Structures are given as C-alpha cells and as structure tokens.
Image (cartoon, rainbow, N blue to C red):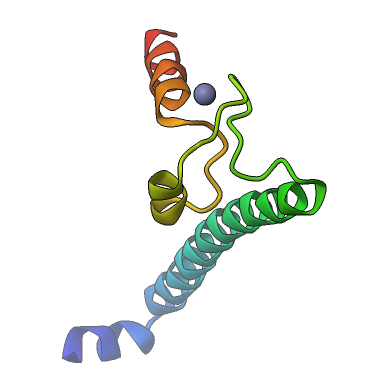
Length: 92
Ligand SMILES: [Zn+2]
C-alpha cells in the first residue's frame, strides 16, 4: 500500500509504527493471558486426576458426566451447578 509507504518516510510514520507494535504486543498479551488461564485450568484438572477427584462436581460432588467432560475436559462443575453459578453471576 502506497499510503503506508509514505507514512513510513515521515515522522508520523514512526509514531504509527510504534502504535502498531504496541497493539501487537497487547494482542499477544491478551492471547497469552487466555492461554495461561486455560493452562491453569488444565493443570487444575490434571491435579484432580492425580488425587482422584477428577470428574466430580466441586459444588455437589456428583459426577460431572462423561458427555460434559468430553466437550469440556477441565469442567469443574456439573451442568446443574454450572447453570446456578452462571445465573448468580448474571444477577450480580
Ligand atoms: Zn454439581
């Protein structure tokens, strides 16, 4: 794109470059934050496998259910409790 080439030759272009670099960094950070969160959840699930509580709902201690675990292997609550939590989160 010619406009971008023109910008690069000017002072404004330098600033624009810096801006795009920090945007990239923000996106990278957002992605790695999300990945860290998911990794933590997976690590949490692995710990549960180790201590034998994997697949058990943390609220009612019922089995989460194989179908649900298949969709979300690191699920911490059964579908019933998940709905209760989601509803109470919305009501806040
Ligand atoms: Zn439950």
